[in-house]
Length: 209
Image (cartoon, rainbow, N blue to C red; front, side):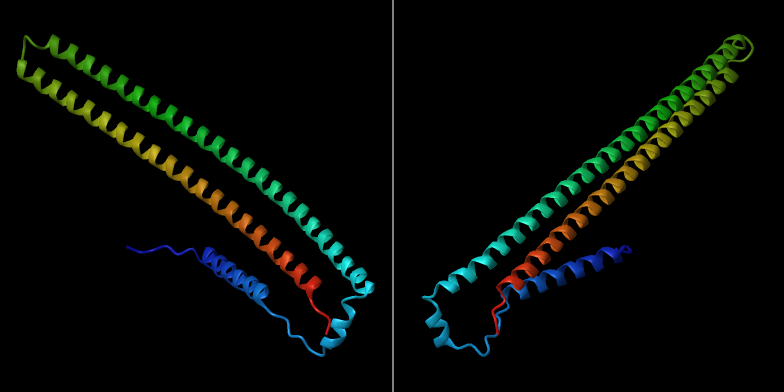
């Protein structure tokens, strides 16, 4: 049996894996220390100027982390509201589709039952009137009507089954598309946030050469 391959999803998976590998490499990267006088650094540990200069980067890092956290909170809230609206719309559409299909199925069954009842009644009346002339013809007519009614009911049941199958398949496909789109969006947001946090950390903690 042939296998369907989602090319766009495959490309997204590859890009996501590459981004994660790049973030891991950035986090594990060790900066190269060049032209650093160790004795001069040791001599500056006791001075107040070093303490004064080291406080500013900490404050800037805290502000950047706070800003990133606020952006993450807003993005996640927006994504959650979008997901809620999409799921609600999909559920409403699915409910309306199922209701319409059920109504159509009930009408089809009722129509088939009415037609079968009318046919049986008409044939029974004709058979009763013609019993005195020929009983064999009446028996054959009843058998034919019964077969016709059975075939009509079977056809209606098959049509109802196919309708429900199509409806549920369409609903399942739509829900899967919605879940996939939401998952991709949340993962993209998380990757973007990780990239921004990684870039901010690299910029603030880079030693002087």
